[in-house]
Image (cartoon, rainbow, N blue to C red):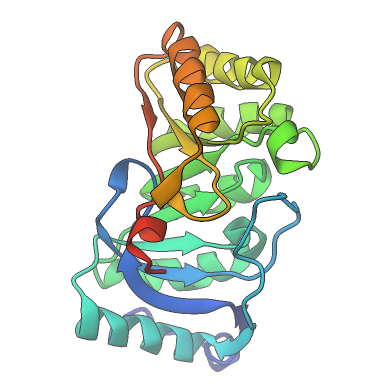
Length: 240
């Protein structure tokens, strides 16, 4: 393991939680991942249910020890999944821990809102898979990020990348079409995952929402080669 100086080894960082579970979203659905969840995000998506965790203070040495302990106890894990919140707000932490853990054989899966282009550039060499959101303002009730999404996806093409769009009954077709056009412009072979948003759990998805998903999938398949509807497995199973 690459040695660290004492100042770095005892640097304090904020983490929401570290845990082992199944990857519940996207094409890596069902794989065993070791999750490092970062607490903060600078978007406030209306549907987000991951920003109410108590923040824990770790020093770098403790975080590394916790990861190695979880790998020994619950592994092997396919990836360390950096999630949040927004993990790219913590790019400086990723640059400290990822090189060390990669030496131990770990691979990294980045789950991101997909608009911090500069920060992605700084850590992309440490990441193996990019799970990138494109945010529809009609669903998130937050700002339009389409221009950042375009530049982010262009950069992420250097790695395995897929795009996820959370879909609600309120999703505006014109916004969805704009998102599809961005993907088509950069690489029409990029996988697009449509993820239904639910209030009471994925076990009972609203019929009207299913109609929207079907309509949007057909629209996207007119321009993209691979479009899938994938609900959240971890919510169906009742795990983290």
